[in-house]
Image 1 (tube, rainbow, N blue to C red):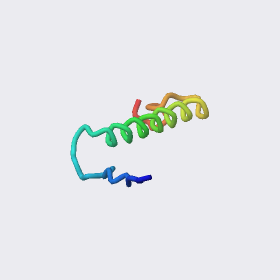
Image 2 (image 1 turned 120 degrees about the horizontal axis):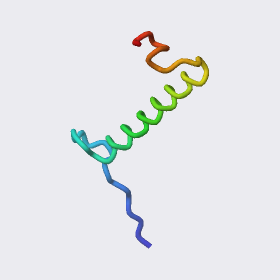
Image 3 (image 1 turned 45 degrees about the vertical axis):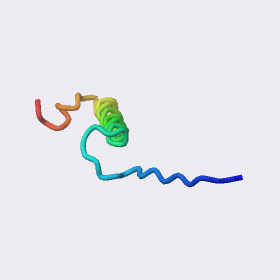
Image 4 (image 1 turned 30 degrees about the horizontal axis):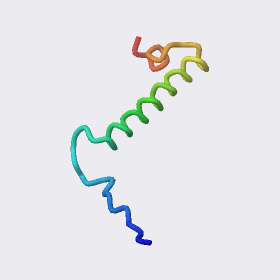
Length: 54
């Protein structure tokens, strides 16, 4: 029985719309959305009001 190693380079240094970049973009967007929602729930103000932008 022959085994093969997974030699796929997950971070080849390629710029642009790679699957790994899109995965991280989605994760960070979810964290940002959750943070904004939690600020609104716990402070009773909108996100922009909380930071004094509006």
